[in-house]
Length: 198
Image (cartoon, rainbow, N blue to C red; front, side, top):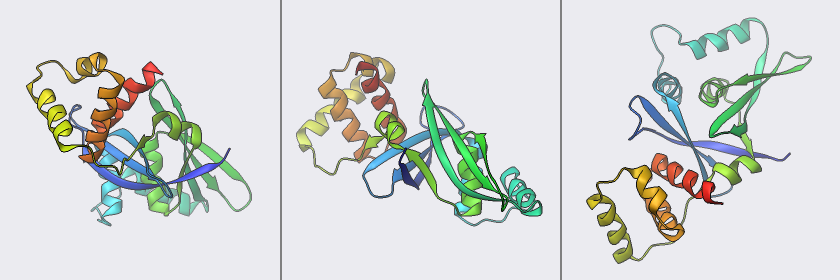
C-alpha cells in the first residue's frame, strides 16, 4: 500500500471538548487535511518539541527517546495506519540495526515520539479518502457565506442537530466555510456527517 507523507500544520484548542486539542496534519503534495482530536498532555508534548522548549525534567516521550538511545534502537517512521469507528490507530516503526519492529500506539503519542526522532509521518490513501478534508481554494459567494454564518448564529439547536438536518449542499457549504476559517475540528464533524450519508 502506497504511503502518503504528512506534515504537522497546526494544533489548536478544541471548541467542543474541554481539555482536548485538534492536531491538523496535511499531505505533503496535496491539499487534503487530516484533523485528529488529541488530549491536553499529548498536545503539550507535541507543542513543546515543535517549539524546542526544554522542560526542567524529561517528559514521557523524552524518556522514551532516552530509553531507545540507551538500548541502541531508533525510530524510522510513524504510520497513521488505521481508522475504525472514528478512532485513529498508529504504528511506530523501530530499528535496532538488525531488525525492524513495529509498535502499536495512539497517533498522538506516536507523533510526539516521531518529532523527537525527526522522522516522517505517513498514512495511506484509504484513511485520507475516508477521513481527510480537502482544503478548498475557491472563493464562495460572499452573500451565500453570510447567509450560512447568520443562520448558524441565530440557530439555538446543537451543532449535531444542525448537521443531521442539513442538506448535502448545506453540509458542503458549511465544510468549505469551516475550512476557510481554519476550524478543523468543526470541519471534521461535518465530514463525519457527510461520510455517514455515503
